[in-house]
Image (cartoon, rainbow, N blue to C red; front, side, top):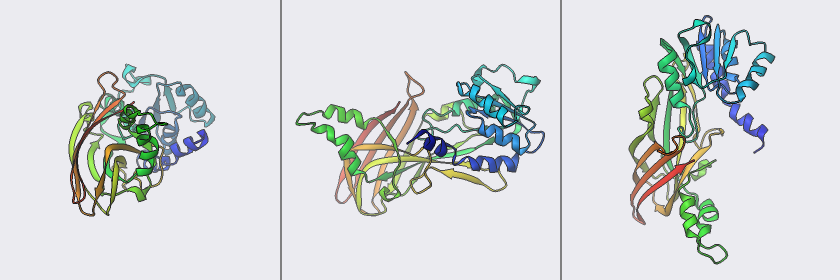
Length: 313
């Protein structure tokens, strides 16, 4: 993927943000853009009529975004704050609260390297009592897929490398989830909800969780992996809008996250794959995510019990 493709894919869904900002940001509104990047959401907010926009960005992109905002004659409304949100003691101009917080906080598998904890901090410190968060709801889903070709090429290959047994690397390869595009035709089960996030009430402690799941098989096939994807919603708009990163939806740069099983399943329609899904920030590096999946399957043609750990880093 070229850098041009990446930036296009990263921005393709932003039209939804603009629609909801036009819908909700009226004059006299003060907006905070958390992790503002290039400043595109800040500029949408300014164009929608915001009185003041604070674009908070910790990376070097803050310098570039200042130029972009000035080039678009919006520097009279948008103020770029080159800082971590946690390091801001007070907002410029003596402003104590903001009416709207907007953020593109989602990461791979929703939570990996996400800025959700930063948004929570901004919400608790700066959002007015009846303030609005965009987006305000996210849901993580799970399904199972057939993916024998990739697993054979990239993972099982280590069992015999030019006649040498390198199975220990195979084990390592399986423990790292793959971020990739899953074709809708690979999906073998229905989708189940793993976690719903309400931005108005979520706490940092909620980012570690464990949940049971049961996936119903929709056709006779094989299963080599479980896959997560997410949806994002803006529920406070007059017309409820959002987008999905599901395999059967339009491509996004988040793609899907694939967790390979050690053994393949042979499944028949209407059978169920049961299990437990848990995730928590890694203790040594909180930016990394630790996953555990316990799988239990008793089918007509196959039985399987697995207890797998994975790490995204």
